[in-house]
Image (tube, rainbow, N blue to C red):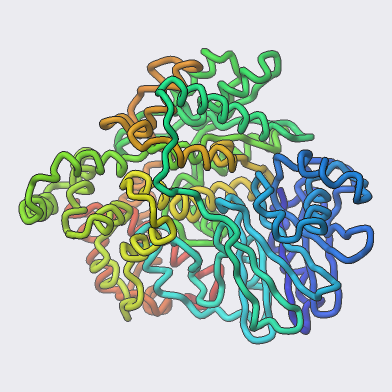
Length: 630
């Protein structure tokens, strides 16, 4: 796990050091720079496998043809190395060298052989060509920027801001994304000329013709509407086997490994399987003690369940205090996120990773993606209720939707009811599903802008993406595709990577083992969610490992008291940073509409806390990454 950055430019050698310094937090153990005429690579190393100098990067092949910089871990690299060891002169035990010679042998065909988390760039001196690739599910971030004679790439956007010719023109469609979803799906970032390389894609760049760079897809999540036929017991056995193999693969490390343990099903089953694999080994887990009553945000308190699991499995549990100075920590969080995401969960990730690093745990395994593979969100349950209402005429459901808009926002139950019925604002079934990802009606999002974005309609974007999986007709699986393709990648994985690497900690995601993900797409949808029971099959596996009260507890989250912070702790920050004067300097938002949003939220007429949080995040992001509000 590291940080990579690179530049192809006539003045590459002048700027690579600053670009690399900007991501020094990602790799506290080593630094490397490679320069060849108009090409420069920078690398910051967090040593996980082969801690010796043999793992230094940029890594150059023995014949001098290939130069590699790599961020991530390849869990099956020893299997790949077996195919290569008699042909190439390996001098280390690192997965970096396996990629280097794997590419020399297989070229881009290597990518689909890799089971891991990765973003890397390879310079082929013979072809004068650079290949930049991102893993199948986007666990590792990768941004790129191209304009005229400059092509830049990096693990984090902040590398680009040190480049003197970097164009900071804002993409207001992307900002509309953040306000609608709280994150931005797909390739768009707040900068018009800066893009995310999509998961399962790679870029080919000719060093002599930057404008003709090309992007290729090498992987798609294989939802195809084909489900294997097994008995329920056979499915339970098969999933147990796949999960165990995934955890076993990801225990590959030359440094200590710890675990997230929230007390929820997903992280708990990962710890339980690790315990099964190594019953006599010390297992260190980390959890968060909520600062306030999480029921105010609509979630059960996790801590009693985390303690229960730790006692049941006889593992060591470190309880990390969730207390933060939100006024002080807000801007720091946004800076490290690189994007104005609107969620407080990153603060919990940062606190846990900080504590883990202090205690010598450089790698953490977590339960991220269990909900996305096996159906763990309330929006999945909304499909069940929609099915029950399918005989009710749409105009009646639409009328009920309008009635729910006048309900008060004081309870989590009311908010959820309004969310479910919000889908009936639309007639199209796929648009209805897509609308469940929104946090504010898009017509209200547009009103917040001085010049409303015209080219972007978020629900249509999601609907159109289903063209990638034309044979998948299950509505649940279509939604899981969106969860894995966008929500997981562009939200959860992004903040998990950025906030863990902020403290030099690698987070691994066993649920995103390639074989496990592909296996999950073959499970019949009625075994993922049975009635309103989410993650049905995963829960049946968990019965072999965990107490019933942990498996069948109410849904929780990894959040924080956002609504309370917005009305209290952050009130002064809101009054200053979202004032007419500040917003006019920013030059993006309609200050009168923003003021109206803040006032109606204070009165409790609407629930706009996360939207206001997002506006604060955009202001904070702009302060760090542009000159607009100075």
